[in-house]
Image (tube, rainbow, N blue to C red; front, top):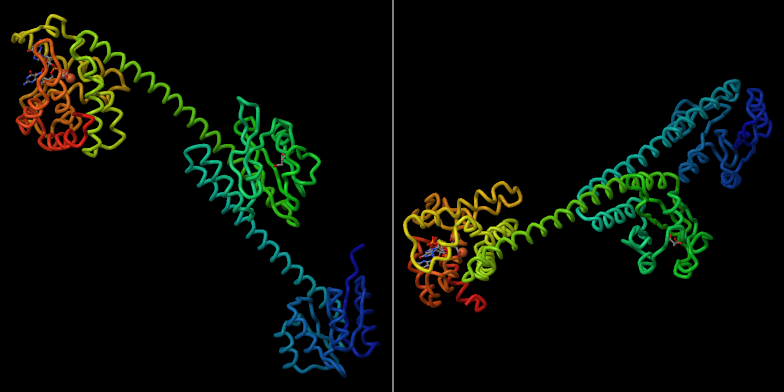
Length: 500
Ligand code: C2E
Ligand code: SIN
Ligand code: SIN
Ligand code: FE
Ligand code: FE
């Protein structure tokens, strides 16, 4: 049977109150009622939170209007029906304005049941509407949090950045400030704290094995755990127990990436707060999203690591080629390494962006790789070259092009091997490019290359003095070399004793 309807009757005449109650019982209401006739009695009766108030309009020491005002002052929205022997139209309208639900004349009390039913129905309807609106608002806040977190997670580039964002945004969404993310280290078979906030900061040194403590069990079982207080939780691990603060409960959920658990998120709230079902649902959604983000990042990081491995393997190969070239021509030993270092320094000084530097590095080391196609008789000839020999020698940038162009990874590094003998005035080789047609990297490299060649012994001549070499560079500024490059080169040589 339904809960009885508790009715507070404000009425000085006991028989009238009795009559009202009878009417309602006749209409099938299961009633629990109480009659009051003074302000004090009325106020006291409000403590029992009645479902409905029936009030006479005029009483010897109290009035229906006063009762209504008292309700309004207390912000109590208890359905209120005026029942009066006689009431003027104006007073009735006034009462309705002040929040009364309905009014009934005593001699029409047959209407009472119908009025009460209608009043209670509309009150229920209003309550449901309000509840639906509150629910909707909550859903909306949740969705907003999820949207915000997913956007933030997408912006992370490393897993540690990702976990930091994940924890901070989750704490914000749950309006608390203590939490941690435990990450599983496969090589050690241990769960360690990757990021911590609030009281978890003091736990950071501790690592747990799968199945150890709350976190280890959540990890191993893949099932979440809610605790009303960590410090009293029988599942908490004894070695950490003394470090767990009193008065904090929370939830501990697994983070899945693909099919396996990769970590555990701990979110803690201070008592008497508990993680409520809505928050728990939100945490579940966050964990799902986190799992996907973790998967994306780890694929990305693996790819980057293997790319880095590959790049360093390639660079080993390049250095090997450069060394092999210098083995043929003892005089040039160390030339490639020296010009590479000086070229990179000069390139940075000229404002070349960092992402081009790696190709300048590779291109410089390989600048004369085309000499692999030039025979020893020419390359090591102790005297001047004949016209036919020069023809072969002038091919060495083209040989480099043919050698390196098929290697996708080295294609962007081709500029220097292919263009380092072009001259600013257009009289160089192999294409006779002029001025800015020659890529800046190659214009920079040419100055460094000739300088280092001149101050080194060659099979066809002995080394020049540094002064003679610098004079030659100055003299060729604007003809062989780009004057802007020469200016900065001279600055660099003068400023930096390392290169002199
Ligand atoms: P390399 O010996 O490494 O010289 C590189 C560049 O430095 C030369 O490019 C040239 O611009 C400059 N350079 C080197 N030595 C001198 C020099 O004594 N005087 C002047 N004015 N500039 C010099 P280039 O001329 O296109 O030569 C390219 C390569 O051809 C040289 O590389 C070298 O391997 C070879 N080569 C050049 N001249 C001779 C030569 O007389 N005899 C032999 N056997 N080989 C030569
Ligand atoms: C544990 O897992 O026993 C430590 C408490 C926690 O951080 O969840
Ligand atoms: C060098 O070996 O220093 C560059 C000269 C050339 O590329 O032939
Ligand atoms: Fe060359
Ligand atoms: Fe060189």
